[in-house]
Length: 153
Ligand SMILES: [Zn+2]
Image 1 (tube, helix red, strand yellow):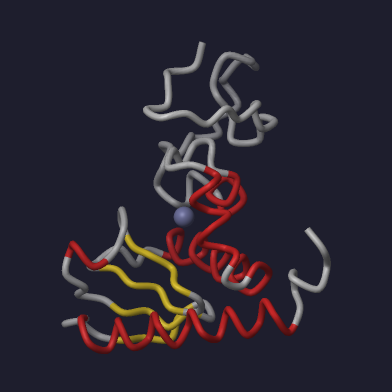
Image 2: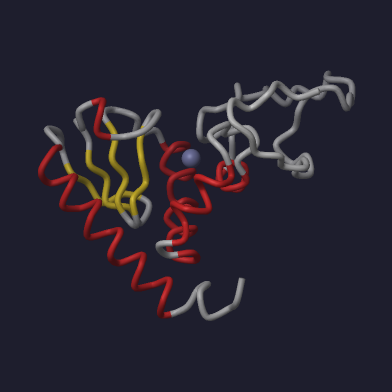
């Protein structure tokens, strides 16, 4: 991908467009408070069908029902940064990265624990180091896209 698309006036324009869409959507649909938090415009009380999973980041807007913990907002702030970097390419790239958050590089970058995708591990120091657990930092696997993702072999 060429650099004029990333972190550029082009991506910024896309980001602002997405933010305008998100804000319009949020103002129309949200029933709860609208707050400025973590650099995000947070719309709460969104109806369930209006966002994905626990919430959606659209440009600089975060749309959710009640999912507004500090961890989540930290996670969503990374998505905002991704919107700024990729502009309107972001939803496309995100889609291509796959629906499984544990493998989606944008979710991994935003933090799977903070995003609530993996259980927070208590760092007691008693855990033996094992390579068995799937770690968010694991290198991206070969991606073979076909209908109905087969379970990993
Ligand atoms: Zn996320």
